[in-house]
Length: 279
Image 1: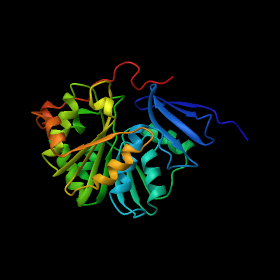
Image 2: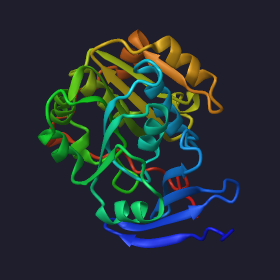
Image 3: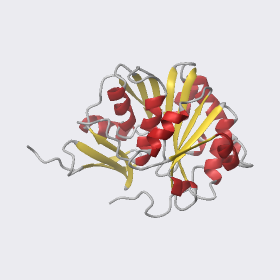
Image 4: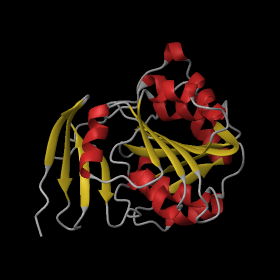
């Protein structure tokens, strides 16, 4: 069998590399300018390597009965880790993936076959969301990073309202965010989505929530209660245990943070050196 070799290509927003995993035959790590973006196992698409991806997967497992097909809008493409997971766990799902970097999408399509039911689009995430049909998605997954930062225009009240418009009444919004104490960015995001959605939850590793290190947190927003008991069990029993914050505890965490207006928006904070870096 031919040994898989790393692939490097200049894309629209940096240098992307696909590196084979020596321990898994058809698994690949995607980095952009050295920052890990995605991990994909083509033989086992339900294998989620990154902690935040596992948490997104846990939420996707509980938003509807197992195996039920969903209409999912993904903002941010990477190597299509989460779309591949949905295609494997919920066959027949219709998925749209919006990625601003055309070169990155072309690299992924050239080297990592894309499952059926996944449509790829090169566009700005917010512009696409604002133009998308109303009530057209069961789930919206936002995993958009410019470099290692969430772009400012995807953090605001206007953006949250656009996401709400695209979702059906029973729909669920998910976002991968990153911050560290004192959590100015994360608190502002929770306040922003609390102003639009009735139900909110946050999933993060306890050490991150205690302010011990910079890390990812998954925001869950909806107009109906998500199955928090099932979600808590899944996240607590994971190989990388996490906590689900909601209700009074989450309101206390938000404190006096205010929703973000377009004119005040800033990107998420720059990760400290070494937080997510890889060779």
